[in-house]
Length: 387
Picture 1 (tube, one colour):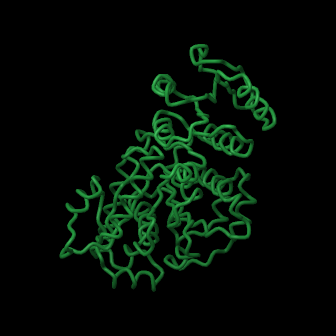
Picture 2 (spheres, one colour):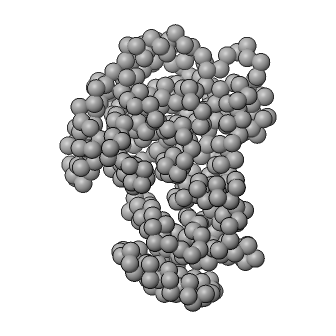
């Protein structure tokens, strides 16, 4: 049960949102207030839905950002990208345009419900992302997952959500024994060993693979819900979840990144890729991601490139986290053999690079990282605003 409060000067607006909350169910509407000053104690409150506008935003958000362990949904009649970005950077979980409609509110409530139910779960979720194809996302996702297992012996799941079907399976020479639809039907099982048996395992290691989702069970309107269900399921089984994401920037991919503790952003040493990298950083900044969540990795780098690492860092105003050398022959040999690079040629420069990234990630204190909040529909909202 979510204990909620509505704060809105407009009585009609309060009544409308109150009516929608009653229809949704599973919510205890504790009280409705006209202003924040009436909200004295938040210890027993899970959710605050409040009205915001540009004129009063600074005053309201100063109060919001100092309230811990409570989720906030801001509502407003203003279509203002600066207001949205400011709210999301100050402890607001979601921003909904007025008049509030039921499907949007339902989606926001469901995501907050998921956060509330799983906030004691400490599985580390890492997404490998680029909005440009052919940069080596799957190569990094597969080899990173393997190296984390090898260097920690933690249980790691590789979640294949890329647009290229079963690439991860090919890289590990795995033929999925169980389809994703069957696995999803078993997510309520409590026996962890039974649940692990549904997943494909790479040889005798602690590396497991969740296969590419079947398109027939995730039509677009259910995609977000399905992915969230899978991530919740996997968080109960693994220490690390490595997600090979789609290169398409849409509401579904933003949802995956929202679920992630760390985002590995890949770029190549060319101006087209670097410009795309800049666009990604602009999007992440608008959504409100903390800089510590984004790690820039240069893929397929060459020592004699006309564009240096210094050039890239100056252009995007970000530090490069790591570099993966352009060792095509070793990588292709590994793919053809269906093994990680670290097994095929552990002394190669590319294997050492994957190992270096894994060790750096294992040394990150994930508990100290600010959590990325669920910003439902933010991509479409920003697009409507002309961002």
